[in-house]
Length: 226
Image 1 (cartoon, one colour):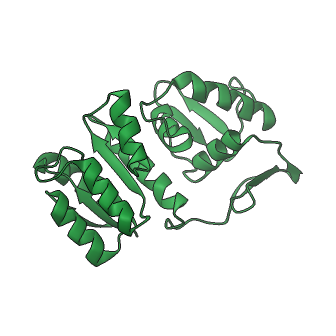
Image 2: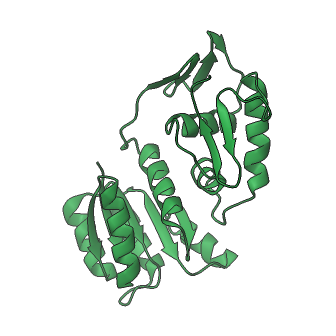
């Protein structure tokens, strides 16, 4: 469980995001203004801050600079400002991630998990085993039937992301958000190419899968081989 502060003046978005985070077991406190959110952050030492830019009392970038003056807590910005210069200005002000409205709750949750992992605050096993596939998270190594797989950093991150949700169908949008951290969603082709490379190294194909099964129109899941 992580302690999360959500700073958002839109009551409907605030309720939707808070409920989704709480359903994942997190302790969520909310604020409708920048200064209230800052006070919560000073008082409660959060593990993650999620905040809008268009706040009624202070511009979000100014709030970001104030947060960064006192804390290195991961910060995710959720905003309707999608222009390149707005993204760059916000990341330069100290944001760790940038999600443009409208967004899916699934994508926000995936990005939250990624930020919490980056900060070492999400609970995770140091090793994941699925059949003959063993993924050592701390060593960033994977073996298949005792043989070390020669994986690129993104291939490892993709494999790990799927293994952490073994048996669960994960959409390409979620994978782009969690593995590639694309602020604009990126291209599904990126995922397809890396899945193809990963399948080859796992000794399988899309037509004859063992570990990686595609659910057409939905996503992909990592399963125990038949």
